[in-house]
Structure formats: C-alpha cells, structure tokens
Length: 592
Image 1 (spheres, rainbow, N blue to C red):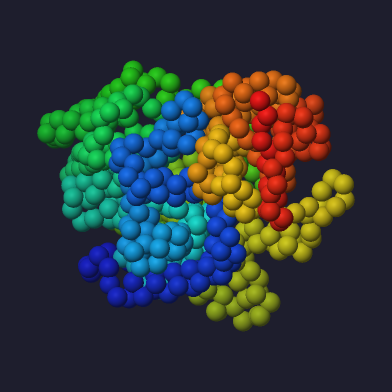
Image 2: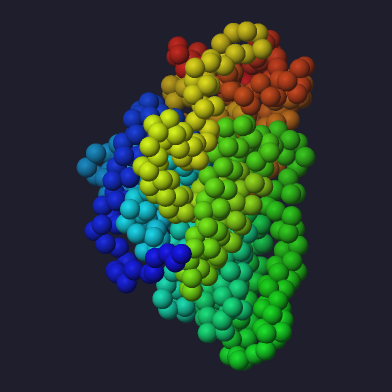
C-alpha cells in the first residue's frame, strides 16, 4: 500500500494555520488557567527562568550586548559569566520594550512571561503540523498538533513563565525537519544547517542530535550521489551560520574554549568539515568505496579538530565539576539525569510516546514507496537518535516528544478510524483508552497521586510545593544596609530578582567555585562558616526551610550549619531579621 505523495502547495496555508491555531488556543487557555496562580505570584518554574529575566533586565538597563556575566553572583570575584545565548533574550526584550511605555516595566515583563512561551509553542505547532499536513493530509496535521499539545515533556518547556531556552530548541529541531522536506537539496541543506547553527548557539546540548542529522544527510548522498548537496548544504549552512551567530552574539573578547557553548574549537570543526565536504562533492562521481572513505574522513577530521583543541569536551560540560558540587547540585538536577533515575511518571512520559511514534514512523516507511519511503526512513533514524539521547538526559525528551508528534498524529487518525468500525461499545472504549494512554501514559499515576495525598515519614501530610515566598520576605532587604547574602543555590536567583543585593552563588556551573563555597558553608560547622563569611564580607544569611535543598544539606551533615538552622539552634553570631508574616523566608544578619 502506497501512502500520500508530497503536496505541491505553499509553505503554509489557511487550512494548516487554522488547525494549528485551534490546538494552540485550546492548550494555551488550559495552560494560562492552570498556571494563573504562579503568574500572579511570579513563581518561576525553574531558577534558570528567573535568571533569564534578570539577564534581559540587565540588557535593557544598559549592560553590554556581549557581556553575558551576572555581576551580582559572586560579585566579590567579578561575577559569573553565563553560557546562555542572546538569541533567547531577544523576543523577551522586544515584548518588554514594546509595552513598558504603555503599561510600565513590571506589567510588560508579566506579559512577556506569558506571551513568549506561548508564541514559541505556536511556532512549534505550525512546524510540526506542516510536516504532517504536507505528507499525510490535513486531518493528520490537526492530530499531530493535538499530540504535541498533549506531550507533557514538550508543554513543560512552553508553559507560561518558562522563558529559558528549551522551547526554542524544540522550534529549531522542527525547523530542521521541515528543511529536510525541501524539493531542492542544496537549499534545504542550507536551511537545515542554519537552523542547527541557531539551535547550537542557543544550547550546545543539541550537538549529539545535530551530528545524527548530519549523518542522515550524508546517508542521502550514499543512497544517491545526486543527493550529495544535502550534506554539502547542511555543513556549509552549519559552519557559516555558527560563525555568524558567534560573531553577533558572543563577539571576540572571549575566545577561550568552553564545553557548554559554541567555542572556537567547534567553529573550527564545522568549518573544516564544510570545506572537506565541498571538496569531496566536487570529486564526484566516485566509486562507492571512495564515497564511504571520504565521508568517514570528513567525520574523523571534524572529531579530531574538536578533540585536539578541546579534549576535555569529549566527556561533557559537567565532567570536571568539583565532586562536592556534583553531589549536592548536579546529581540533584533531575532533568539532567538519565531516564532510569526518574520517577515512574516521568519515565512513562519520556519513553512511551516516542517509542510508539518510532514504530508508527517505521510503519509509514514500510507503507510508502520512492522518495517518501526514504524520507520516513530518515525521519525514523532521527527520531530514534532523539529518543536514545532522551534516555541519557531526560530533558532532551522535549525534542523527542516534538518529533514524535507527527507519526503519533497519523497513528491517532488510524486508531480513530478503526475504533469507528468496532461495533461493540466495550471494545471501542478500550481502543480509545489505549489511544489516550499512548499520548498520556502517566495519566493513571497522576490521577492516583492526586487522589492519594503524599505523606512525610512522620505521617504528616507533606506539602506539595514550597510555601516560601521570597518576594514577600525579600522586601525587608530594602530597609537594610547593602551586603552579600549566603542563600541556598535555588533561592539565590529569587533574591536577585526581588532585591538589589548580591549572592554568593546560584546553580550555574561556571560559578562552581562559589557554589562550593555555599555548599561547604551549609554543611560545615558553624564556626568555619562564620570565618568564611567574615573573610568574604558576607552580611546576611537567608534560607527557605521547607525547600528540598536545605533538607539535603541537613541530612548529609546532621551537625552542620544548615542542620542547626533547621533545628532552631541558631549560632550567636547570627542576628535574626524581622520578616513579614507568611513569607516563609528566614533571614539573619551576620555579626562581626
């Protein structure tokens, strides 16, 4: 059985846009309602979102475009350079600048916190819908948009207040897949390369999947030498785009090699790869053995360049973290850990939909013929690579979930057609339930968790979220003399956001030395902590007692500084500061 052929229509039609907008309106309304309390209270999903808005504030206030340091973190040592891209700052800053003259900066920021993530989702839905619409039909495009809107790993990165870079990574990945449908290989390759350049400029985490995509374009060359321009265009677009974006967003003041962002070694590898690929293409026609050898040498050249100039990057950006920082911070960042270290609900959401989608994609390849069969084979390879990466780093499940939406949309359509033909209501209900579980596999666990309250070890009902409101308690700092604050890593960004104070550290690995200072201060004896704070000139200590991080410090060091604070055994060198009722924040002044 042969499936559909390519639709010779414009890039976007009113039919496609209408279906995508319908799905977008439904999920946007739901997300705004379910996140309304967090929006009103300015409760960010992640400390990175807090710092992203701070970075935009600093940019608007006049911080140099190429200065990506947060100067209020570890200020005594000059601040902490961030590895984030200015590309992600642009839409947030644009909304704030557009509206602040009309409604004031606070209200403009609130609008940006809602509009930017939802706009990101709208673009992603359009791109995913376009793949399904062009290859599988309008009905499937609607179901693909619905499948993406129901993907928890995807929506987690595009809900209101989630303004960090993960949503734009999804958009870039879908832009690459759209480019791989182009009718002209060289142009399609260039667009794919440019999209990957933007993706990697936003986050180096996309590098493994970008390498897999480049491998797929090389495979197209091996299948048909006339398709060599896919790989050539992709490598040229990747190299040119990366060089241009590096110059525009990073500048040339810092040419040090970093493993957490595109750096000179990466640029060198991309450029040499593009030059070698272009040269190899000009030697065609070549025997198959020469093709394979040449492409292997191109890959080896790029890898050798990276290994030669940045050998430490072969083990990842976090491999050289201080062991103490790794234990107390990195190993506690759930989204950066492999899937087997996750709760059951997360495992199901990350594993089941992409697995089902991969089987559907392979089925589509088997039912197709000609170029469409090859395209679905390529799609299956890329989806499979994204799925494997998500098993190692669970936050990569967002990209895998987005890519899964297209074959899932087709599968939903097939299941619904089959369900309509089932005469017995019981069987039809079971079929629909199975379809729902494929899209939302963690739904039974979620419903069970809602119905059954979580309990602490003591038998008391455990709070579902922290009751700490740093914004309310931090207002007291405006009445106190300036000074640095020792705070848990996850509280630091909130203090920076709500006050004009500085903090010793936040959870960002380029400030690992200050992170170690913070962790050591909380797990060490109070006398040692006092000496450390006096030496730095730190004037305040602030904690949220009901957060997990302080409890982790206390559990690891029962006789340490944090354990004493949580037990109410405050050392005499700390002077309590009166905090408004209901904030949940505890603040002390450090005595000399």
